[in-house]
Length: 355
Image (cartoon, rainbow, N blue to C red; front, side, top):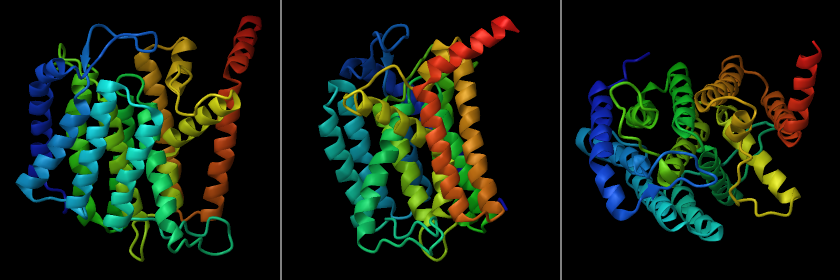
């Protein structure tokens, strides 16, 4: 099953990422690509926001050196360059939400139109036969790409979360590629995994990596979001798809649900759906009394649960209709819980006091 795994590109991506993460730190301070503590951001000192740039650079350099490429590699790296540049500019100048969206749609257009990597079908999710899009698939893909990019951007709120969630998703994709006899395609996601791991080591201050704190930044969260949606569309469409579209939805289910619940709550309050706040899932866990590390562990465990449902549904060929409506019910329940989380927590505390 692992005959297609090549270790040279993986080690190259890892060590290039380590080098870039270290080398870019002084440049981050010189260019002002650093995160300052604020009411929304609780950390010590100015932290470089170059983790995403290093991850992108490591994947690109590894592809050039080892000749292991994504499908439509030149267009993938073109789109990735623009999304990383957008993230850097946003980290530096705090761009407007409308400006970011316009640029994200431009990047999505590179994927859908230039690379012809777009959604043609959602499968039989309604039970009436395959839901095919035709030309509308181009426009639907734009919405999906921008949605996934922002889902990973929004979930990036505590150390290790965006990177850890990305690893869960990418490794789930690799597993499904292997079991579906598409092992020749695993190197693209595995290179990204290898580049993310050293970032997590610095970001979480693992033993041997302490003293050089680095954040992923908007460039990193948007890059991994673009990478994941690029791979998901590629692997779910066509006659030789490695997985069904609804499986991909479940695998990235937690970031999607958190984004949908946040946007719904903001819309109900008459706020901009892209306005930042402190009501994300990790904020809720921490306000409920969990530490940052325990919140991270709990959320990643939830992410594993959603990915596991997608994988099991794929392996046991559970009806796409059941998988779709199961996801929609889960989304509604998730949203209701998030909207009423403080009432629920208050009831739980009262029950504990009386028991």
